[in-house]
Length: 85
Image (tube, rainbow, N blue to C red; front, side):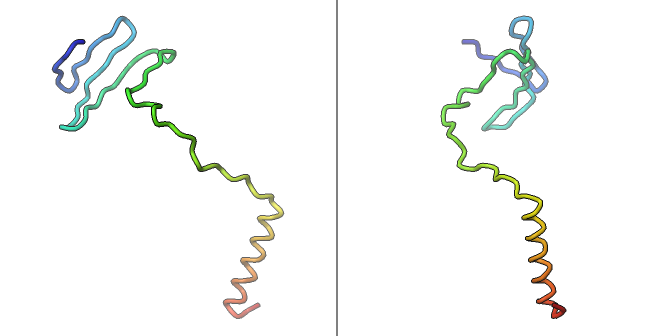
């Protein structure tokens, strides 16, 4: 394993196709930019290890008819509250 000390803006080349640029950081983390071909799989060490299915899902759209009914109900309620209905 190779250990390097880099300053922001310094980079290392890995082969002819990969460049890793150190762009800064703090005491608890560093920021790296990785320039590599799109077909190359790059993942950090903890990526995907705790991945679980999301409990959230997108609800199906309601029909245009249902939207019109809801709008009509809301308008009726507004008129009642305003005392004009």
